[in-house]
Length: 140
Image (tube, rainbow, N blue to C red):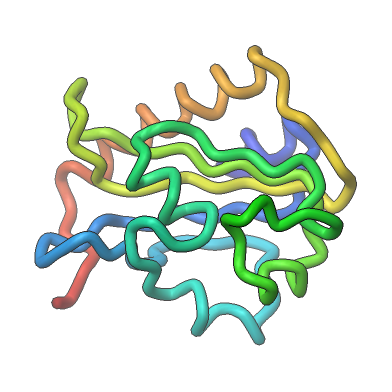
C-alpha cells in the first residue's frame, strides 16, 4: 500500500473488509486519516460514503474535489480529512462479483484519476483480495 500511495502521490489510504454478517465494511487499515474521524469510518454500511457506495455499486467511485463537492455520496465529515481528490474501489473475492472489501486513496489536491491510475488501483485491490480471502478481520 505504501508503494501505491507513493506512486500516485496520495496522502491517505484505507482498506475496509466486508463483515460476514451483513453489508457492513469494517476498517482494517488506514494511513493519513485524522484521529477524529477514525470512529466514524470504522464501520460503514454499504451504500454510505465513498467506500460504501463503491461496495454497493461494485465499481469505483471517484470525487475530483471532495472539499468543494460531496457528489451526493460523501458525508460532510469527509471534508475534515483535508482530502480533495479521492477514489474507492471494491475488492472482489477471487474473480467473482462478491465484494469482500474496499480500497480507498486520496490526495490533498483536486485530482481526476486517469484510466491508468484506476487500473493500478484496481490491480492493487486484486492483490489485497488474496490476503483478505484468507483472514477474518471482523469480530461480529
